[in-house]
Image 1 (cartoon, helix red, strand yellow):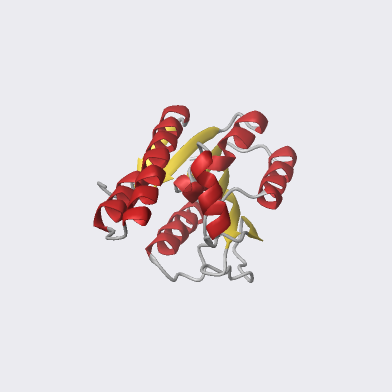
Image 2 (cartoon, rainbow, N blue to C red):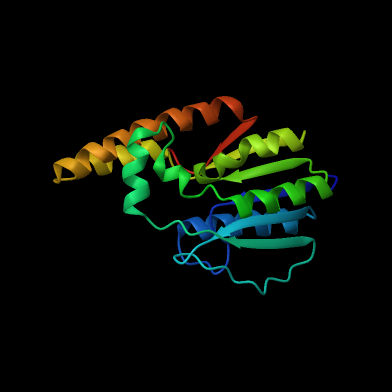
Length: 189
């Protein structure tokens, strides 16, 4: 099999392997590298998921951009008058988008892998700048998780807000499913 140029856009770093998501991302990365592919990994790092920056692996270019994804009450409340999911909007960042544009303008990729729905806000940028096959690796059906959080919440206002967010997330999730070239699912859920 010929080597491929692959871009992974991730909502968290693969290292350190601190939870199921980072372990899953690391496993895909390591498998692709073992198969001899050239991988560029651009990931979001947060206070909750800081990146291990000293990653040296053959055929890997790694870049982490810090994005503050913390819940901001004012932003969450003003989002009520918006149509976009606040959950996704926290991962949408100008500096990350600028770095993604730089990478896409300097490189030609065969495949671009979106790790989780939280990277879907970058699809339009990728689609404008690349003809690569675009793959969405779904860790979960996110709107189910948020619907369940809404259903289990005892606080009436929070329950109402989470229900709105779950509905918006569902709309965006389905839209993303219908635009992407291929979906790879990690679990049955």
